[in-house]
Image (cartoon, rainbow, N blue to C red; front, side):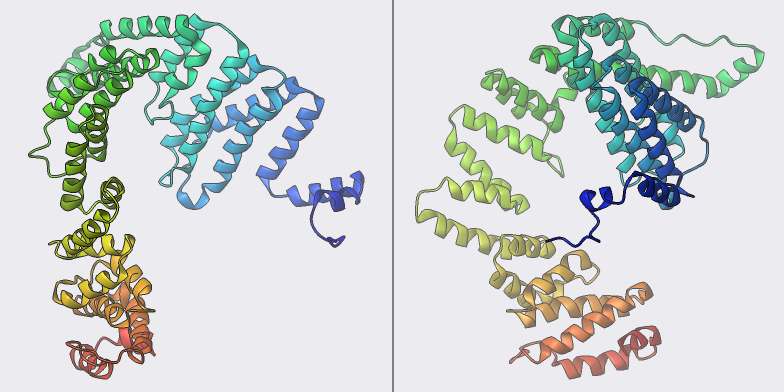
Amino acid sequence: MASKTTLNAKNLEALGAERLAQLLIAISTGDAAAKRKLRLALAGAEGPREAAREIAKRLTSIARARTFVNWKNRKPLVTDLRTQRSAIMEQIAPHDPGEALALLWRFMGLATSVFERCDDSSGTVMDIFHQACANLGEVAKMVGPEPEALARRVLDALQDNGFGQYDGLIAIIAPALGSEGVAHLKKLVEELGRTPVPVPPRSEWQALSWGSGGTRYAHEMEERARQSTVEMALEDIADVQGDVDGFIAQYDPKTRKVPKIAAGIAQRLLAAGRAEDALGFIERAEVKEARWIPPEWLDARLAVLEALDRKDEAQAFRRTCFERDLSGEHLRAYLKRLPDFEDIEAEERAMAHAAAHPDLLAALAFLLNWPSLDRAARLLIDRQDEVDGDHYVVLAPAAGVLAEKHPLAATVALRAMIDFTLNEARQKRYGYAAQHLATCADLAGRIEDFASLEPHSAYVARLRVEHGKKTGFWGKLA
C-alpha cells in the first residue's frame, strides 16, 4: 500500500483545493513557465475561446522576442513551445478545429524567427515544429473540405520553409486536401514555377550594387530557392498522386543517374509494378567510380532483382556488398537464404574474410558486432602493430567487451590508446589514459602468457622512462 506522503494524484487531492492553490502559487513564484501553464489552465476552464486568446497572446510574444537562446538556456523556450502546441491540440482542437488550425499555422509561422535566434544543434526545437506540422494534417482533416484555400495556404508555407520545418507537409496534408485539393495545389505550384522572381527596380546606387554582384546575387539566390521549392513540391505531389512518371520528370537525365536519385525512382517504379523499368534506372546509375555507394541504391538493386526473380544474382550481390563494406546486414541476408549446413561453412569463410580485411578498425567493429569475439581478440593480437590508438570510439568499447574472456586482446586495445595519448601529448585524454593503465594492471593478473607483449611491469617501466616528465598523466594515475 502506497504511503500517504507518496506524490500521486489521490494523495494531493486529499489536501483540498485551497491548500493546493496555495502550493501552486508558491511553486510558480519565479517560474515563468509554470505561471504560463497555470494561466492556460485557468483560461481553459473558462472555455476554448478564452484558451485560444491566451495561446494567441503567447505566440505573439514569442514572435516578438529577439534574445538569442544558446544550448545552455534553451530549456525554457522548449518548454514554452511544447506547452503551446499541446494546449492547441488538447484544449482547442476537440472543441473548435477551425480555431485550432489557425493557431497551428501561427505556431508554425514562428519557426523562422525562432531558429534565427536559437541554437538547435540537438534538433529538439525542430522536433516540436515537426510535431506541429503533423498536427496540421490531423486538424485540417477535422475542419472539413476547403481544398482551394488549404492548397493556397500550403503553397505559402512551402515558400517559407527555410529551416525545413514544413518538410513532408504535402504528404501530411494530402488526406485533408483530397484529390481535388492536391490537383489544385499542383496547378498553383506549376504557376509558381512559370513566374520568375521580379527583378527589383534599380536606382543609381542599386545599379552600382548590381554591377558588383550584390543585388544580382541576391536575386539569383531567390530565384534558385523558388525553383527548388517548385521541384520538391512537384515531387511530393507526384508521390501523393501515385504518378511515378511525374516524379521522374522532375529530374533531368543526368541527375537520374545519381545513385540515391536512381534508387528513389526505382523503388517507386517497383511499387507501381514496373520492375524492368526500375532495373534500367538502377543499372544506369553512376556507381562504378563512386567512393561510397548509398545504401538506398544497394537496397533498391536487391529489391529489383528479387522482384524479377533473379535470386542467384541477388545472392551474389549480397555477398559482394559484404565483402566490400563488411556489411553485417547483407551477410545475414545472404546466409539466411542458403541451404542448411551450407550457411555454416559460408559464415566461416565470411569471418576469415573480415579478419583479413585491410581496414583493421572496420574488421574489428564488424567482428564485435556480429559477434565473433574470439576472432576479434585474435585480430587485435595478430595485428597489434596496426592498431591506431587515436580511434578510442572503437577501441574503448572493444576493450570493455573483450576484457572478461580475452584480457590479452583488451590489453592491446588499451595500450594502443595509452601510447597514442602519451606520444602525442594529448593532455585532455590523460585522465582516460590513466584509467586505461589501471585497467591493464587489473587484467595483467588474469593473463598467463603475454606472448609478444611486454609484461605489465615492464610496460609501465618503459612508460616512466619515455614519458616520466608528463606529470599531468602520472598525477592522474596517482
